Length: 133
Image (cartoon, rainbow, N blue to C red; front, side, top):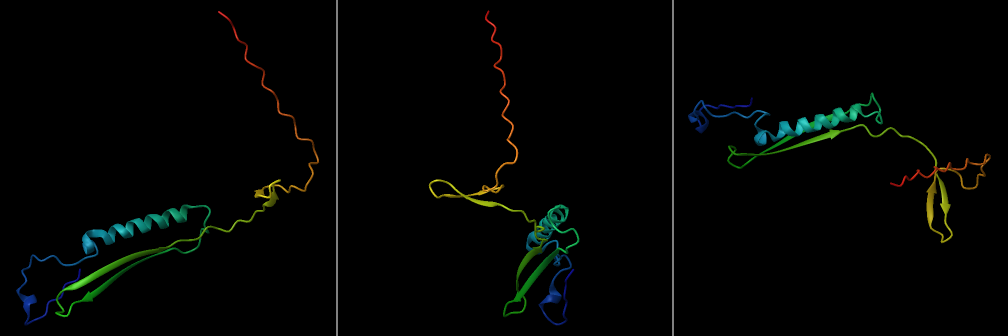
C-alpha cells in the first residue's frame, strides 16, 4: 500500500477512512485484470507444442505517475505487455506450378516427377438395390 503523511500540510487533515492505493484498485482494478489476461496468454504459449519449451516468457506491468503542478493530484497510466515465445521454425517444401493460362499455384509434389507406380483405380461403389412396393 502506498500512503504518505507529511507534517504541517493539508494531508494531516485527512480522516483515517481514506482509501490508499494498491495494485488492486489502480484504474478500478484494471491493472489486475490486465495481468491475469497476460498471464493466461503466457500459460497458453507455454502449453503450445509449437513453441520452444524452455524459452523465457515475460509480463511487464508499468505504471506511469505524473504529478500536477500542485503536487497533490496525480495522473496515472498503466500498460501491461507480454513477450511470448515465437512458433518453432519448421521446414518443408513446396513446388511451383503454372496452369495453361499462366496462373501460378503451389504443389506438395514435384510436377516434373513421374509416378513410378500406377495409382490404384478408384473402387466404384455398387448402386443400392431399390425395392418396389
